[in-house]
Length: 261
Image (cartoon, rainbow, N blue to C red; front, side, top):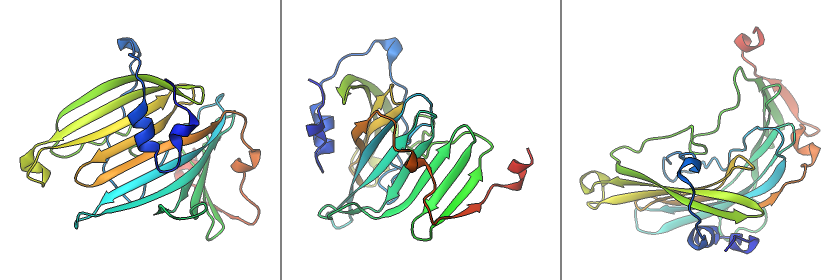
């Protein structure tokens, strides 16, 4: 069975995608890269890191779901979306929007958006509230935020018996996804609950797009978060996404030691 857009309906992404996948075993030599460890439920969720690679244009909508367990036993559920894109040259566009209650209508408020050109190494962070476009040349390629790619592993304190499972492959929107699950056990004496706790992280990676389409974190003590691309368009994105909108003031924040090299 392959995944269809119906599996990504609003607020059911976690159960539908991660609970309904049909797995196909992968040869050992083709195992997916080990994914990063999650720090836990947080109010700033990095979303999907769009790798700045050329030759694979696409645009998509990312859905983010957060369920935070509160001390009184209740759950605080919120969600948001981000629009993302990458053009043929590898220039990337990403957003950060406000986390809102599940019954919020319309798109959540845009907090910031980011444009990065891998050819010029020019980083641009734009703030809709001030209409400022902060630009800086990077002396090295753009690095992904923590918890979004295999290169940003974070070790959970007191974790033991860490195991990684290859889940096989499935398809979504014509893309082959490779699944990886990481389980980390914290003994009862160190978990803070008096019971043994197992933290689960699950990742579904698209080799064609060079991005994780789904990242899920579940810690029985703090809650769960799911980040997933729910719509993918592999045509060239609108060029206006990668341009500074009219009315924004450009502020050059490039460090002096970068401009002198």
